[in-house]
Image 1: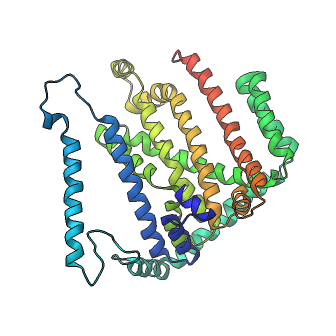
Image 2: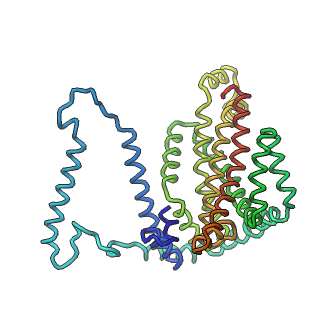
Image 3: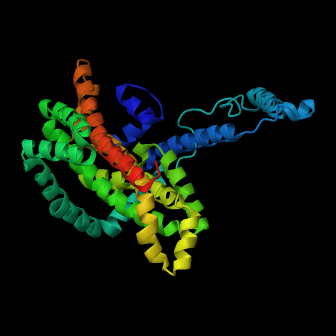
Length: 385
């Protein structure tokens, strides 16, 4: 959000990041992005440690044991103040680094990263160009044309029909209301472009997440490792994912979609692992006693039981993909995000921005309604509700 706030005038790291991206200074942008990531990880770890902190209010503790952390914090502040005061004498003719770190005076590796980007371009330019051209011309453009050329009535009927099949008349009325609001707005075609980009990202993310999550879940060590990787990647600010793909593929739909895939794969992988872990151990034992192979147990027992939980992961993947598609508009796409960006820069664009935001939210709510309704029905069928 700090990066998004930079678009409306906030002068923080997000401003430096956007300025560097506008200048195509990948090295400086990467440094700013890493700083934002480190702040996010630090706050995440501190809040997690605080939440897991156990306080013994009834133990027979000494004064130091009871107030140890408070005393250590006060001591650290006192020592820091002493160093800051001493620094005013040590650095009389320069900056007092013990008290204040001056702006743009630290160690920078921007030139190193920029040279690395230049080397990648010189070495792999032809390969990246071939892949980028193939993806855009053979996959993305036909998929985009399919979404845009499909009659609006057919699209609405398809969505409402899916709602009726999955959840009956109530679900059909909910999806009808949501999709009709988008259809009657001036942004129907841009909503379709947003949906096409999110759809491509979700399909790729779910394929990768299902494969990686299934393979890692077979071993407790790889499970812990992959969940830790998901935690780290989910802590990164979403805008950071655009930096490496921009330096490889430039400002194209390919960059946005690869960033979408990387970002949205996180919940797909996590929910696959957690869904498979939720299968009762007794069923594993019963399957082993029946003589089935691991693959047969996975296909016939674990997947059917874990699938409702995994579908909630698909729900989260859709939300992540939509959010990243909107963020990707900041580097140049033609979806709803681009018009949201224009509305933010227009003093009279508050109403337009609100309608555009509602359209994005309604796209997510349509999928959320369909998936959650199906999951609840499936859980009742399996006796898991």
